Length: 278
Ligand code: SIN
Image (cartoon, rainbow, N blue to C red; front, top):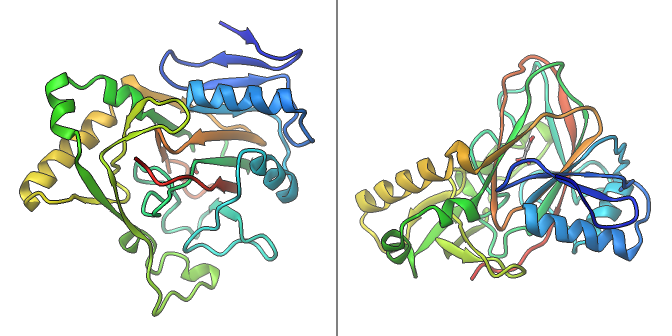
């Protein structure tokens, strides 16, 4: 199915629950208000949207991101010279780990975690290097009413310490003496724009459910993580050079598959500031 929402811009859903490809728009150039609004509507409906053949420069990628909010500066990773709002996503034969190897919502340890992220890859391996995206609306909706009632009112702690400590030393970051964000968020959050409920715990950052004994917290998180990772809730994106993915961190988790070592996969992400979850 393809839906025309603007003269040329088309939204092509990839699955019924999550993901759509956007055709007929050049996001490396200034957009008119109707194009910008159509892209925002597509993001809110499909949760992650994909574009092909968008050779962003750092400035044009930042300009596109700023159409949707102020840009976020990563708490650990230094950006390229003069671009603190840019997160370099890079893997090659020297890499020991890559960004996003565990399911996560970006920087969910922040008090006000990012609204969304826009990733542009200019270099991709000949095969592999896909990204999986999972709808946390779909994961929440699939729970029974009894289980939803159990989760009501629970909060969980999200911590950046174990994720970021020492992680960016190879980029010249010295984090001795500094602390990383840690925050408590509702286990089920309400999306501020759509009003829909989404699960908001992830294996990358969430350390425990607040106020529960460790064994109960571990068991509940293990169930929620396994449930959230069901293929039924996912879309899988196959990158090409200059593809762009724009995801809504308020209702999506993602996982970058590192199955292409020692090949190079490289690009940049801009991240948009968000609100405090409720
Ligand atoms: C990330 O932003 O977590 C990385 C995603 C990816 O490299 O596909």
